[in-house]
Length: 436
Image (tube, rainbow, N blue to C red; front, side):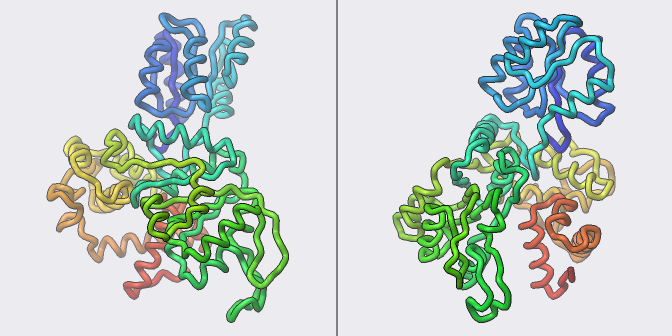
């Protein structure tokens, strides 16, 4: 999954498969092609797709058998079955078996593209790539729990993509049309964190010149992410627990209780059990938020995802700026796979962005990555003044195009809002602020 929707074609008629592939490729879809259900099962064991387009009559594993397997292993994956002309029984059987839709042969390109557009899954948000079996299992669990309203605790080292997975859960939930609100418990001063989370009334404290809703209210009908929850002060944890138990919040300075309809997600890069033991995380809050734990693997433990993640950065750059190196050289791929990635996905993204800036041709060479010495950087990819100026110009341009809206600017840049905030802070700290 590298930024474009992928379709799996399961068709044993070579001529029809070729015609389908030509039409879908022209429409901008990426493809996998197999001849029967057995080959489809093998592909789905190593690759993510957003739609399966399958014939019914194939050997040795036909479309119905494949459909039954998909309903067990990938229940959320949409399937469009291609049935014989005039065979209504086949179409009915396909729909009863769990197919999302069907195409009655013969059909034209317009009908094909309409059915695909209507049924294909949206790409996951951000740069979520799941090729490695271990991470695919995590994402399948995330997809399942997304359909519920239970609290999810996402654990993992820094840079493993915890917020990306949280957004994935929101996007695949029934709350997807509602807001996704994130609060970084480690980034907000303790004195302001309660007011930021709970909200406050005018005059509740010095400087409160107007009433303001907190993050809980802002997330009504949607999802609230408590990022790095183990960094929250213990005293505030008790107030948070009460809100979670009673499903209502009081703004600071008010006695009016506001009923909440909010789904809670939380993340941490700490050992939660150790945090409970040493008193930095309340035990009762731990049990409240750890209803459904998800643990994200380090990038070094999901090596099949390294090159697709790097390609996703290339794709996002082309989407945002209209140009980027077309591909990674063979040696560059080998260098990416050989490196240990202590900074996980975040480090990989930084390395790729610097390499793109340094590359003039159509292919990224291994030297542009700067990984030969075991650590990224060095003379090849040092953050030179020229590169920082280029990055500054990109951010300024994105903010201008988004009329100062950080969320939209981050989307244009292909980065998370939190990463954009961090970069803006870097420029401020360096004495070269970007005025929004």
